[in-house]
Amino acid sequence: MIGELVHGAVPERRGPVADLLEAEAVRPGAPFLRWAGGEWTVADFADRARWCATALKGYGIEPGDRVAIMSRNSQWFLAWQYGIYLVGGVEVCINAELKGPFLAHIVQDSEPNLVLAQAEFLPTLEACGGPAVPLIDLEDEAGKYAVSRPGEAFTPCDLRPHDLATIMYTSGTTGPSKGVMIPHGYYSNLGHIFSRIIELTEADTAYWVSPFFHVDAHLAVPATLQSGAVFAFTPRFSVRRFWPEVEALGGTWTLLIGAMQAVLATAGRPSNLERLRMRRIFGAPIPQEMYEFYEDDLGIEMLEMFGMTESNGVLYGTPAHHRRGSAGWPCGGFEVKIVDEDGFEVPRGTPGEIVHRPQFPNMMTVGYWRRPEATVEAFRGLWYHTGDAGIMDEDGFVFFGGRLTDNLRRRGENVSAWELESALRLAPGVQECAAIGVRDEFGGEDEIKVLLELHEGADFDPEVFFAYCEANVPRFALPRFVQVVPAQTFVRGVGTGAIQKHRLPKDTSGPGIFDRNVVMTAVAGSAKR
Image (cartoon, rainbow, N blue to C red; front, top):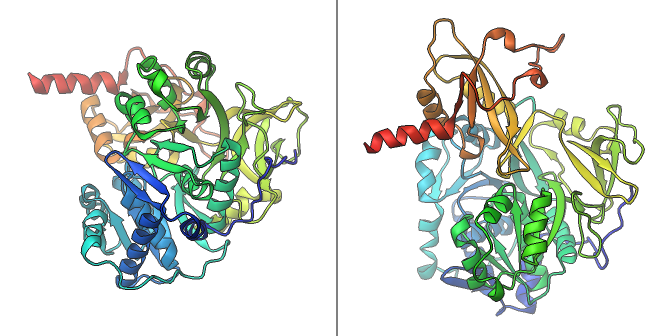
């Protein structure tokens, strides 16, 4: 289906730096960033981004050099990010939850020239075994701003829309996480389309709770700069603080991914509902009961979207045209179709793989960092293959049908089963393992169950196993359930030798199955006694 571009969208933007300079020229004194206890105008932000760019040049960063950032949400995270862009560097996003081999892989694979991190992450980075590169405390460095502002305006690097802006890692299926290469124009063009879909104006304020190291924030900030709206944020999502902060920061829209919607709904109706300006929530995915709570009960419109790091905004539900249960329709500048395993389009209403391609330049990734074979495979037949199953109805709405590849999705994060299994094979006593998704009590996503085969003669202690997981696996990838099984449980495919995961037991209770929540709660209780 050839997408019908949302009304008023002209995806011919050059990049985030151009968006910032344009906003600074038109409304320098307008509020732009807002957080609890502080606010920056457009000019404030531009000034600090230039200062960061000057500091980066002082560290020897040249156009094309890679600068990694590992940080929670903060105003200085964004200032350094735009400083990297201004100097012509390439941002490498590091998920702040990473540790152990997950973190080491990204540092080793991207080979940054410099790493900027909050102080809490410096020991983790030093211990990950990556290449020896300068590690800079980004907030300590930013503390020099007040006494060492640049004496003259910084001249931005000459950037083209197709120039590389970011390497952002996403889970692999048969190997470690791959670096998605994102050009400058991608952020501005998709941010431009998003601002048209959500109908952003100068009267709007985002309330942003998702991590800045995700691709979503990389679009939302340019969308805010282009529209004249305000970007308000919090360091991390909190159920207790959510509605009070929405009121205090003046939030009119937000993005709730994964189980955020459900845990917030479980907490009940906000007591300050009549004082809230919140009018619209974007979600991915949105279970039926979430529409009932937010739309039917609270009166806040829910709009769905479908995208990925490689192209974030392929399908949207728009205020005038959306359908509950769908992932949206092609209105964001992409052509979308559903195909069979040979790449041929299937009739409407028939399940298959969701594939897409852009209708305009600089709308999606230019490939995978140092993985040309993976790039060619993903774009086979001149369509990007998402690895997601779906059905398109007669009206062009697409209904998501789960992953076709060996990836898990938990708490808004993609988890590579391959990467998780590689880490768990190093756990004490483990010979072989397989990770699968099982029912999530919050609805819509996976909990992770791992099945283990032990070395001959090895004993299994669930406390030791889960403690190993917590020390070596990111929080979002932690297995919830573990079961020790005999070797014959792992039935392997002829030729490939891959474990046939559809045959593995998905029980989450019963003899020999351990629940991390139960085990670690008991450990904590024993420690208190």
